[in-house]
Image (tube, rainbow over all chains, first blue to last red; front, top):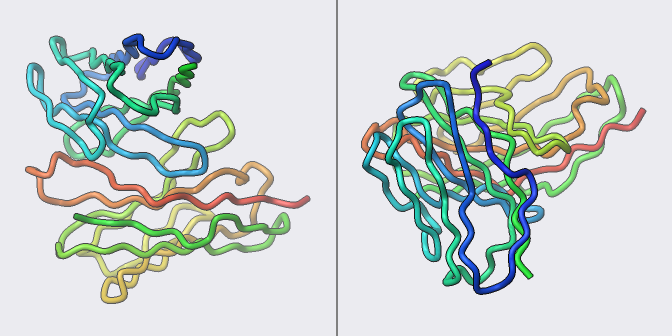
Length: 111
Length: 117
């Protein structure tokens, strides 16, 4: 079945540690996106990539980094520079002419 | 930059009744897309309905319909014959039609819909 996989569903880290969230898609989509969702709020764009080896900052990129070495993978690293990393993170992908398709999300808790 | 505002944090509706969710947006663009997404407790984002700004006709998907008022920059969602499964967070979203903009989505803050049996 085609879809987006985000693993793990729940992730716990100590403050000061970098952590990488996985996003894999087998939909053959060119574009991929990372959003952050805080409790009771809408999604905010962190980074996006329209093609392999290229990506752009979204509205809240500070403290995050990404890579796009393969079409199917778009990992997000939450660095220690991110002041409030605890949040729900959603990955999405898109085919030209269609809308974004979302993964199930990863809940990151940093203590 | 575009902004999307949902002024109703929570709405309650009786099963089988109708509820309308409000959304306003701000943009200087003339061509764009508007969406309503549903986020149930599973937190999976599900596309409910899409409206293209250049189309005057309001979009409809089964029990879901929109009232798109371009001049007023208003985009409301009507859920008819509400069902228990409609209980969720609903997000209004905007996307520019300009390809160079990266097809990014800008979301409102969400409205929680409660359905009473």
